[in-house]
Length: 212
Image (cartoon, rainbow, N blue to C red; front, side, top):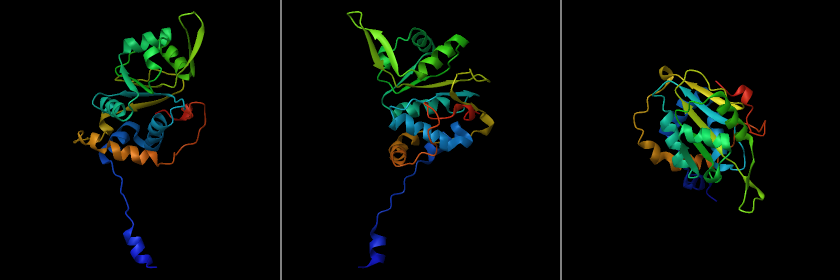
């Protein structure tokens, strides 16, 4: 048996996604591994509830790019306007959200009572409604809320991962078009990756120490 020949014959695949890595590092900064965990759980663990992810701060910090990237890699996702988000959170009128994993909203300017409604909704597992016979039915809800805005301060969600972005600390991404071509490699990487965190809460993360 020729061990040297055997080792040389192995095909080692190098998985690279430099543009996506730069994007995620821009968003999660020194919490890059936590960011990977969040995305990995959101995509591959649909039964796991997660905290609201709030990304806020300066303009031109790739918030919209990040939302578009997530929508591209998670097909069960939806982008909604702030008014729709507020209405549905207030009335728990979810119908077309029940099969959505990622529910994302940009430029979300929410009042305190709207924030409370959304925070409460985020923890729910079952949403109750009534059928045509007026009988109560339970609908399973596993949505993950991702909220972005340009305010200088956090909106103040209960149990959230809140990240403030500073344009001065951002690294420029010159070839955004490469993100789409790297998505397959990124998904393959996540599918074989071991999470860096262990579950500490029903929403997985200990949100008291994961906000910046």
